[in-house]
Length: 70
Image 1 (cartoon, rainbow, N blue to C red):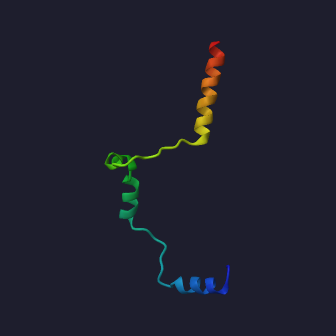
Image 2: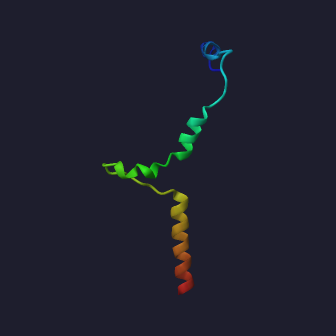
Image 3: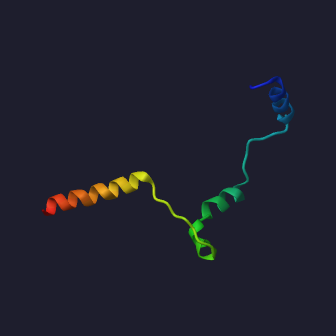
């Protein structure tokens, strides 16, 4: 803990009646969630960036192909 105040805050948040459970309907909604279903509703410009690993793989692959062809 960073301070005694933080410990007091945590102690206040704990409860004897708390059960660490999730409603099944919430899990079903999360399993059905697909961002691609609502992507067509976006009406503003969107920046899409690729991961650096994929970019390196792509460049490496095309470099190898050029070496094999020549």
